[in-house]
Length: 473
Image (cartoon, rainbow, N blue to C red; front, side, top):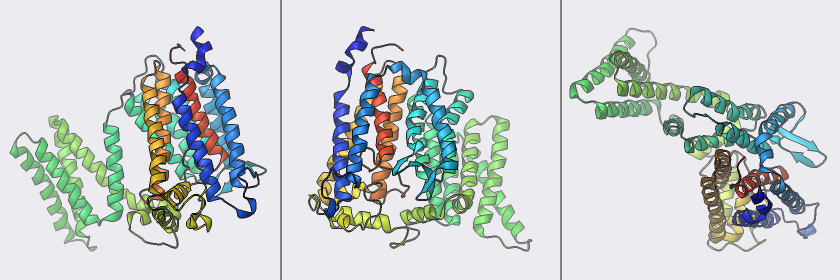
């Protein structure tokens, strides 16, 4: 108990210094992005940069308050905080204000509050609370079901708000599960799904199914102990495809070769799967299931892309993948963003001298595209410094998480790291054309009270937990 009186000596001041440095740099760049010659004072609260200063002041108050609250509060009240924010996510669907197509804001006068931003730290707390309970086993089906409910319940309500970008952030929690012992097969499956999604959009069905079948046969060959085993597999695929090719000659509708190939491959895989299950050939069963799952997923991509994604999301993905090019429409933001960043050169045009910034060529430049201002006015050198600071912060958080003595603090620490990493990676990636534009802020940089406060609370709860790492709770 005595150690708690020395809380300020145990605080990680390096992380706090990084936080303050990023917030200060963000404020300066918001001033540059929203600069108005008629209101030149950076403290003018009628402008965005003046309002951001108010949000920063409030964020420091939140940070100090969090540091003086006992750590047991965050453990014992985690479920209550989670429940309150779930209620707010539901309530905003009925009484919230729609901004940029998403009904995710409560508004009081000129102030807006977005509960989905604060839901992140509540989800991290509950996830840490549940996974640190005595007897928890991550490989149990019940445990995985509860974890999925904790993570994806907010996702459902956020998607109903039409805020896809905020919903995608929650998938970053999977990385925390991997650190806590979840099999790497989950990451493999996730990566495979992402690759198949892209391939299904950018290449022809015939090419895709040919590649999938060829890769599957190669994997069968690698895991075959005898050549005759692979021969039987190859024969199953060949006979099945030939069968459908012959049947196609006797039907009124003429199917394409891609349809015949996929039908034959599915039938061949089903036959191999049934035989493998009967003879207990585990590797063959897994390969067959992966192939069947891959085929089914690729068949559903077009349908899902057309029916579940909003038209502007479709356009942005098509623009990113090079399927379409609309520099005056879906690709306008990214194109102007790249022009702004590229025009900065090595050292930038100078503070408050960015032409792309001053003439508002890039929409949302003080929020989602704040990184453009850094690139144009500070150049490659400035962007390198910003990226280095974020990477240093992320590595620092991981190091701090690993030194925790309690599972709760470690899991929460990793949750903080992966949330910040996702925002950092996607936000900067979308400004340079490497990620689709999904509208999420750059932590501590982008304009807005909700995002700054939520990231501050998220980070400082962990700083408080770390300061009490020698205590037991």
